[in-house]
Length: 463
Ligand SMILES: Cc1ncc(COP(=O)(O)O)c(C=O)c1O
Image 1 (cartoon, helix red, strand yellow):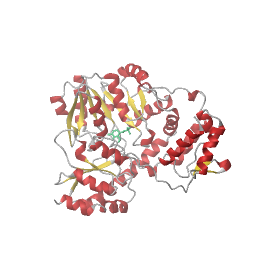
Image 2: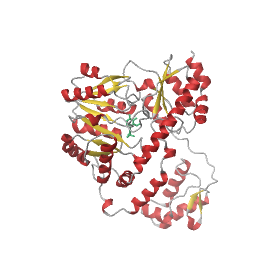
Image 3: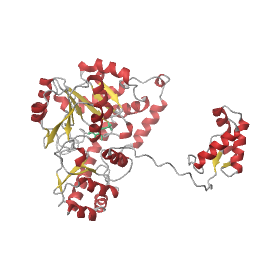
Image 4: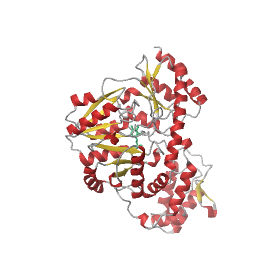
């Protein structure tokens, strides 16, 4: 590579907008080493670029793209539409914004950052040489132990460290479980309506996917007995059904476990926000009643700590531990060690329990203020039926079926609500908005946000 090639390369990259005005370019020495050319070659190319006004040398501080450079950037190619699936595209686009009423994200403004940062520093400083090798595939042992203790105490799940498997999120849990123990012909039953992303994943990876409806007591177990005796898996959210937030009633819990035992079904319990129960005592997980070991329990730290931690876990039934281990040693790599170490300290030093307790009372008050604000402004249009728990509110439309248009209107005001109908798989749809409340800090904030789409909302719902 000669100096002309380097000159052309930089000029083109600057015109394409790959380097912005003011941005630092690589040092002459680093670039020469990287390209395997003499320093003089790079120096000549940079001299020409400086002479033409593309770059500025700041001496020992390095070379930057001229901040006053005014050039017409080459038109960027129109990005292709990322998804054919329009529901998916909408949700992904929204997830990248910072709107109010965001769904499924904890109250990050109240996270104990100082404590967390102290732990990050301490754990990073205590890294050893051994910590730089491969992390264990099942997860960092002290973290698995801390999770097992937590589940035994708080969720009533009797389990040991050997059964805990750490993953990067619920979707990984699902994928891994099915990969480890399902066959392509197996019948998999999913809730309808059910968690949007799990449904998208299952439609991709499960050839024999079926549904079970949900009512005010959760999954209709009679329907399972009537239509799905031949199922191999049921994927369900018993604590707070996603998205309806209803809890599976105790009689149905027993009936569901009995159905699974009789028919050799594996129940995959998604206990994504079981910790957040406000009006009665916390209901233990379905797994806590599972004397036949038919429940594969999954939980996540996305709701209790932060989604960017990417940490979830599976409690693998004892009889599956060996099989699970063997499969994952082949297919998985384990997760980065450092965040696991930080999380293990956060739990074992008691900060996690304290944080959960604070969040429970915070969510109780935030939920109430959002509920009251919606009722006050839109009470004539929505049926708001608060359940005992959950991190969002379901506002059912009283008369309209236009929830997709309505959520488009609210989203155009940066209110990140979702239409309930797109959570359904089959025809018996409910219509309404799914509204997160965890990031609303005051009644005034809720009221002024809800007033933004008022005119268009009333107009649409009065049609
Ligand atoms: C029903 C349900 N399950 C599980 C999860 C957790 O997903 P993850 O652990 O991948 O963040 C969520 C997150 O929104 C959810 O809504």
